[in-house]
Amino acid sequence: MRYIGILFILLMGMACGQPNTLEDKVLVSEWSGMRDSVDTYFSKLTALKQFNGVVMAYQGDEVILHQAYNLQGDTSSLFVTTESQFDIHSVSKLMTHYLLVQLESQGKLSMDQTLDDFFEGFPQGDQITLQMLLEHRSGLPRELTNLEGEEIELTPTEIVALAKKEPLLFEPGSDVQYSNVGYELLYEIVAQIYGKPFAQCVVDELFVPLQMDHSGVHFYTQDSQITHLAKNHVLQDTLLVEVPNISRDEFRTARLFSTTADLKKFLDAVSQEPFESALRHQGIIQKDGGSRGIRAQVYRDLNHDFGFVLLANYDEMPFFQTVEDLAKMMKSEPVDYPQEINRKAIEVEESILENYVGSYIFPDFDGLVLEVAIQDGELVILQDGEIIGRLQAESPTVFFEDPKSRESFEFVKNESGTYDARMGWKGIVVEGARKRVE
Image (cartoon, rainbow, N blue to C red):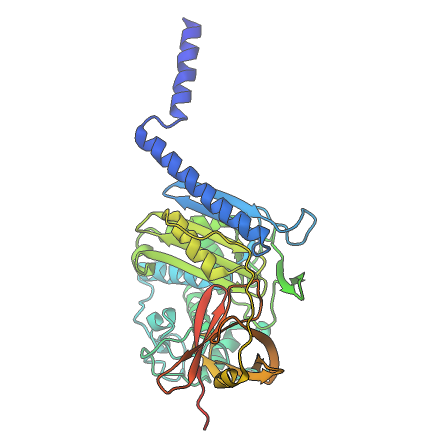
């Protein structure tokens, strides 16, 4: 009888460890197919030398895939594992929103409060609300325009003082302009309420409660928590080059880093009230971040109950296209797997090229101005008088620089009879308006 009892226990254990309904079996099959699709996608992207990093994707409570993909061997400075820590840059903005919602739920602030409640002498400070800062509707510019020196050297107090001197780009609430300056003010407001540096607020009020034990901050905290920090890389003249993780032209205030597993804990937290209602947009909570040599994305689809974290320490990936494709795969929608591209150039008469000569303004890139000119029978792109790209024609209106890349420079006729530009960048297309000649 003792042996029959042991056998019964073993069989029960085996039964509990396997799907015991048709629904369970179907789910496991779906997850397996989804995992294979995601793994194949990133394996092909890595084989094309367009990805180096870590992916975590999950459906409901089930982690579908958690894997590191590496371009080179274990001895490379590129090498990462699923335990690697990555700088997350603007993902800190989503964490800031989380802290503000938490403070509002505790009755310590209101999103309708204005800058006058926190800073003296701020121009139009009685009109700029916290909600406007969160949604980039304050009118403040993307970066400080009156700065002498380097952003990395500024203290939070100095940043606020310089922000007060910035002329607004538009009346508060009337338009949208992505603004790092606006978020620097939010960081300082959070710091004021808690009575400690913003970085320490993130650690004490977010990382510790959510048990994000492998996340940390580079500056303004008692312990940085750096153990396995990924090193950032760019492609320079066909060679992979390591670049500093800390850039001199960025503020120190919110220099956070994390892991895929920790960021999933954060996504789980923001999927609960009161955060979900405040942070969701069309059923999705997401934020991307990045700088030279680094890319980060957190993504939670509440309607379809899936999420993913994507971290890369190499910035040659078609970032936005990859994020879009990953979201589609998690919904079992078809995508094209990455494949080698070999674009063919054609000759275009110079009389046609002359239609495109001029300057183009790109509002999504903080008013970036690029000039198009003709040199040796081909189009060239200049920034501040310096050539930054040479274009080959794929058609009379579509041009490319790298035949291995999908990114294009397309010219589209506008209502005035001249041409505007569409420029591909990291998987998205940004519009450039033809600058009128005075």
